[in-house]
Image (tube, rainbow, N blue to C red):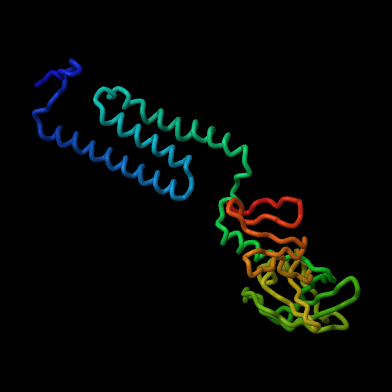
Length: 263
């Protein structure tokens, strides 16, 4: 039957069948769950400092709750998915991109200070010294490394098993001439690159050689040195990096600006 809504003068249908009533309440429950899920996303984005995404889902959740609960907006329910999709996938990305275009916001600025510190501490650079060309010589199932510099220095390693790709230190000895076996080609060096990158070759004078390219080995040292106050000293450029609240690390000695590595 039909009853009159006195406040609006509109007919409102009340079904005599319990199934339709239960279906209506089930739809309201689904809408409530969706709104709660969107509010949870709002809270999660807000706690992570992403206020623009939090605002987006707050507007989306509020609109969903209003449109699907008010009977006067029933006709808008059919176009709401299209409008919501247009806003989320077209309008919001345009506004968001326009906003970050005035900043240096990028993927490198999304890391925490701990992640940035770890990445910086893992960086190395080639120290002053001779670079050695690498040649591989087979010895049964093992391989021997032969290093020779343009200045005439020669080093040779003991036979190695390249199946072991763990980081390890290998001592090398001075040599007068290359091994007598036929040298392996560039293809074999490329295939063994993962194992070669994990090697730290220690010369008789204590210098440590690391892979500095496809073939050369050179003295490689850690670029950054940690200080007690939390700052990092750049050995290559001779400047000090200190963490700040806005940027993960910034230079406080030289006038040149480093690209921020953290948010």
